[in-house]
Length: 140
Image (cartoon, rainbow, N blue to C red):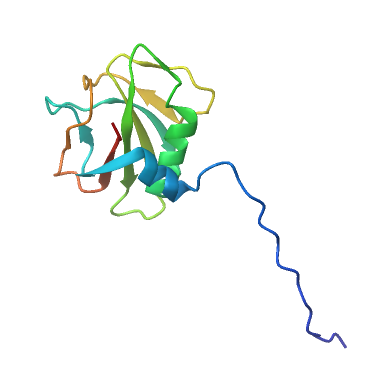
């Protein structure tokens, strides 16, 4: 007969890491603007590098830092939007915002890159009627 005997398990050692934890990246690099997609001073939306299945705003901050910031030509990285679908809890997306006409030159496999928006310059607000989004801008 099989028996269950108590066993001891060693605690895994935590080695120091040079990378910041996701929550540290979020608070160190970004400022929460409000609900809704991010907008520029004219109320316009930004072109985006989009990653599906990024499940928290913290993870989105890390994804944008690692994949998009520093990997654009012809424009600047401006922050991100985290989308949490209101009716389907399995859908969370990360939208890394960039200036109009910027090109993504990074090596991360983005779900897709959108163009056609005309947002440019720093994030100054958000479209508050779209409450499934959270807008974060890069800290100045």
